[in-house]
Length: 279
Image (cartoon, rainbow, N blue to C red; front, side, top):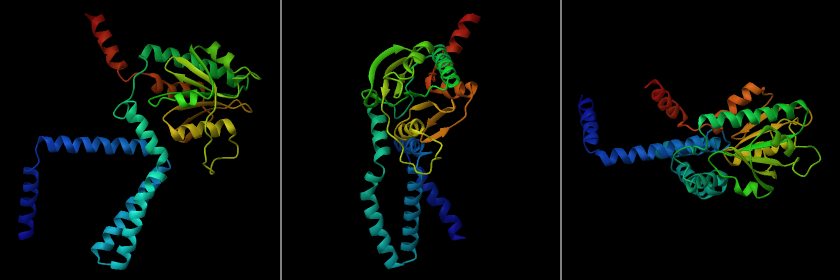
């Protein structure tokens, strides 16, 4: 009985001490933790995070059970682990700092409105369809929140307006730009013939060649969307967050590409236009 009375009183006492600034503080921390989770989700780092949480939980249980030797060993292991974390999570930390430096940590950078996005996706899919039909190998990197200036610097700077004919000319076989990747920012092709980092994932299928491994490797390090056309089979694939989707048709490719270009404010703009028309 005393326990049932005391617990609600303690809970009420804690709630009564929380002010508006405390609520804002908690909300900011929650948003930051959520953004970190989104960044780590679907990456190899999430398994490491789970391992760290399990280790911390076991340490707390051993300390509560007064298992002194095991507690001492686990505490030392946790200390060493926190020293090693910056090394283990180096790619994720680099990605987070780039997001923060570019002002995109708390939201998506809108590049195109809905109409422009549809036009660019149409031209891209038109080019990819032709490349697939002729079994012409291609790598198309769609830049999103994280800028890829270091990747584009490895190729030839172009800065041209996106069109299907333009892209087909870039990937003509036996030309200097054919073997590299094309970097797309918004509605412009900013560079071609660029070099991409290869993935170190050894569990991938042996069917995947250098283009596919380069696409996966870049998607592991940034938030770019990478379209791959196989030179051997003409198969269309898309790499994102270290994963690859293969054997896509043109309709599916359009659905995958559209969110990478469409501004999140496009829907609101359309509502305003429609409202003005009705008036």
